[in-house]
Amino acid sequence: MAKAAAKTAATASPSAERRPALAGRTVSATGVKVEVLPPALRISLRAPEASVAALSKALGVTLPKQPKTSASKSGRTALWLGPDEWLVIDEAGKDPLADCAKVSTLHSSVGISHRNIAISVTGPAAEAAINSGCPQDLSLEAFPVGAASRTILGKAEIVLLRTADEAFRVECWRSFSDYVFTFLSEGAREAAG
Image (cartoon, rainbow, N blue to C red; front, side, top):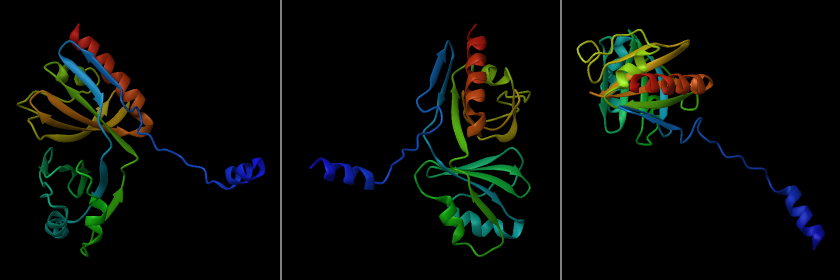
C-alpha cells in the first residue's frame, strides 16, 4: 500500500498557481486610497489609420485617435498612446487578442496581460499622491475624466488613466509594481499630511 502511494505521488504532475503581483495590497490615508486592482486582459495594439475601423468593430470599442484620450464600452477600455498605438484593457473577461485575430487588416496585437498590473488611486487627494512623483498636470482642466497618457512616476514608466473626478488607474510593468505601489503609498501619506 505504501508502494502504491509513493508511485502515485511520483507520477502526479506538479501544479503551480499564478498569483497576481501585489494581490490584495491596499493603503489608505486621509483623502486617498491606493489598491491593487484585479487582473485584467490586456493587449498592446499597433495599427495604421486604414485598419482602425475594422479593429474598433472587432474590439467593440472605438479606438481613440486624439492624444491623451480613451474610450470605454462594456468593460473594455482603449487608451491612445501614440499615433498608431493603443493599450486595450478588458475587465469583463473577454479576450481582446482573440478579437483582433479575426481581423485581416494590417495590425500587430500582443498579449500583455501578465506583464502589467493596475493600481487604483482614489479620493480627494489622489492627484496629489500621484503628483508626488509624476510631473504631469493632473488638474481636471488639464487631465479630465477619460484622459490617458504614458508618463513616469519616479523612475518607472506608467500609463495613467483618469477614471473619475477623484480616481485614477495606474498601469505599470509587473517588474516595477512593488516600486510603483510603494511610491504611490508614500505619496498618499504625504498628501494626507
